[in-house]
Length: 116
Image (cartoon, rainbow, N blue to C red; front, top):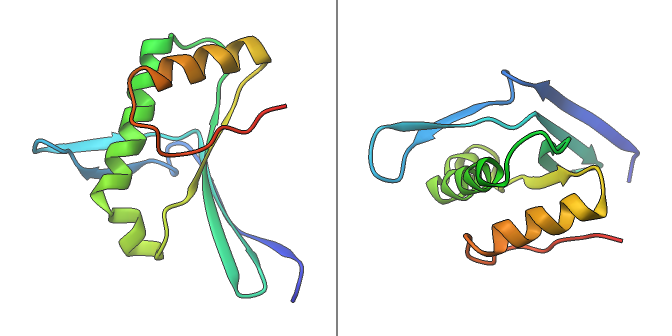
């Protein structure tokens, strides 16, 4: 089967992705980092966001909307055959609750939230 291998790690700005905006023009997805790993023949990637409670909740909500638009563009799926996971690290449970609440109020529910 083989061990875990880190195939790619890119921090910003090398992790950024340009794509066609939903209503014309172009837009940018700006994750803090992107990583790709493999175990044997199985490969997975992830966009990483590190929240230190310095961004406002509306700013984070706009960023989450950018992820949804990028997913809808199909660009990453065409390139890799899958859409990478989205990993958002927050400093504490209070911030997690605030981010989840803000996102739930403005986004269609598409994924899962894992916490303690």
